[in-house]
Image (cartoon, rainbow, N blue to C red; front, side):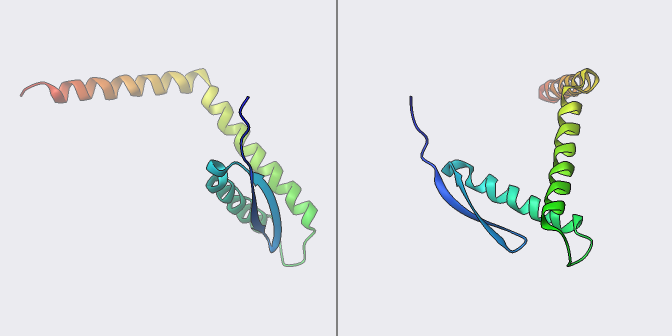
Length: 101
């Protein structure tokens, strides 16, 4: 069994610093996630006086809802069928473009 080396990575969210262990290839994604969380938390706080925990929970709920909506859409049979139809149309168009004129 191979073990993945994890690095301690520091991220900042609303002026608070957090140390997170992360595999080196995932570090850029971790920074993107931290930026997204910070942006969403800034939107959730109505003013400079806020309850950090409440804003964090609201942000987690909003991001979870977005994730679930995306998953649901990607697993929707009608959506999958539409994507397959578009793939076929693109393939047909590419084949027609390759024919001599």
